[in-house]
Length: 293
Length: 262
Image (tube, rainbow over the protein chains, first blue to last red):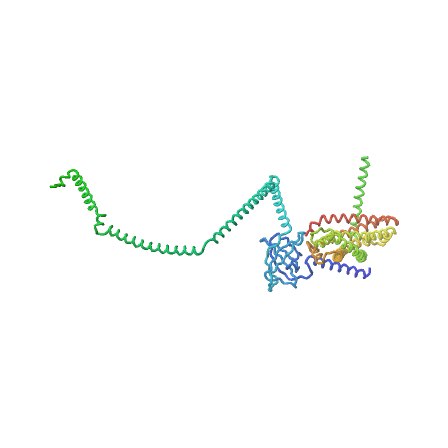
């Protein structure tokens, strides 16, 4: 055996092992640098595993280095972030689909204009992730099913049950109605134009001097009417005073109106007058003794 | 008629079982020869050079063409709308999981296995093996065990180099001959990757290496007298090894494929 064989074989094996390990680590971790750890919490079933990329605003800055199952329903995910990158304060982490083949990645979404950074070993708050491919496909399936149902219903309503024919009839009737309304509108427009012209000619015929004299006479009449009203008011006050006095005063008129005894005597007087008149009529000689000579 | 059919069937079964049996005996002899520690270690290093180091150039050339063609064809098989990084993913999965170890093993069957059978067969027909036995050397420890160990170690190493060369070749082909950019290819390489995919490739390579060394050395060991016998043994070794490699490929895939899933 030659020593050269040992050297060649050793070189080849060492080279192969180095290439194999470095290549595997490079693929699995997204690079050969170890980086510093950051943490994030996601719910169970997030589809995370070691080696998945970590993107900050779309830039690959590290990889998932560890996924621990926590009994309270969360996954404690350790992120290895390359040392040349820092994570701004306020950044949120979410799980996003990586392509259409079912792989996942962790997307870090920073806030704009933030100049402070999270310290190493800090926990990045979890944000809302994008829908996974499965969720999108499921949603698309449900949407497609609903669209199919709607299309079937529309077909039944519009094709099978004659909805399209009804719509066509309605459109034709609407068109006729529109035409009638147009005719009516044209007629009304002509009549309005005529009325407007007549009104303009009438207004033009009115003499302004006559209107002024009429207005002055109207003002005078109004003043007279006001004076008359005032006089009537005074008269009404005087009459009211008189009536008050008649109604409640101590005079004869008040007693005549309000005292029942006076009324009884007057009534008795009238009765005796009636008897007297009757007796005079019956026996005029008793009262009239006319002698000529 | 029925009796003749029965005899033919019986003969075929007996022949198959007999072949398996003699392979079993041969394997037993190889295991036993491991006690000859003064004989096989030095020869193993030499065989590692012959099988591994001397095959590096051929392996890389084959792998380079393999990777380039795979990536090129994959790019133009994508229908519109599919992300371009799928080229990296499909190329990686094709090369690492299947084409890398399989084509490397098949190529080495022709280069290493045929040479192994011819060497040992020639030693058999020229009675050099008998001479070794006369000198109290265990011929299995000197001829078979070193080749088996060397193949078991060097096939995975060559497969690793082949995978690397194929992926690099795929990258070069894509960036020079297609519209795929480096960042797309690298992103695709990393999609759904797990280190076990590399281990899976090495498991296949180890199995293929064992099959090449075991079958080819045995066929040389039992070669019949004359140049024709060596030729027949070599041809038979290549055929049996190729079929054995494909069969092992299916068996390994059936066993380990569920674990390869990302």
